[in-house]
Image (tube, rainbow, N blue to C red):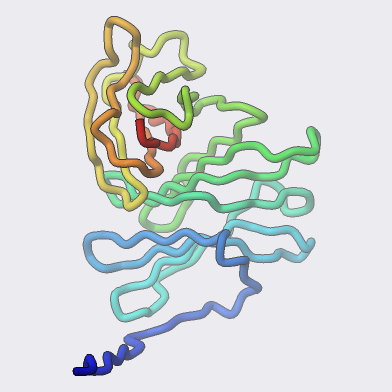
Length: 211
């Protein structure tokens, strides 16, 4: 007996009409109210790619959009991953071209809910004001370095999956080796958000592999 045919209806679609990006340069995440954040890139007047972030409601109506670049004339932004923090603010990790070194630097960008960028971290060839995570990929234990003088300055460390779900909260690193046990995590891409005593947040991304 043949299976009945299944039909899918388009509930909504949206386009802002701006020059877009390749599919692999697009990141999306939905919040608890059904709003959708879409991050990609768009060409600016200098033929360089700016980051483009848009927020749509559950009906597909554009609520707001914002573009961002470090310098319009020389920089190209590449979008990597996007998550939402506990307050629902979008955090985007990617890279940006550095004309002075002729290579791409790591870029972490946090927006407030009113679409204003509130935190930008450009990392030249490494991670400054961001986290160094090693080994990466990792299988059982993950170690953290930062530009802070000591990792004991962290008062809260959270592991977040690619959908923005907080999976694990760590108040202190292991006193033995300063590592984090990740052996129980399924293989995937994860983020770490570390909060300092001064209430600053530092971000890092790692890949968990089979052990």
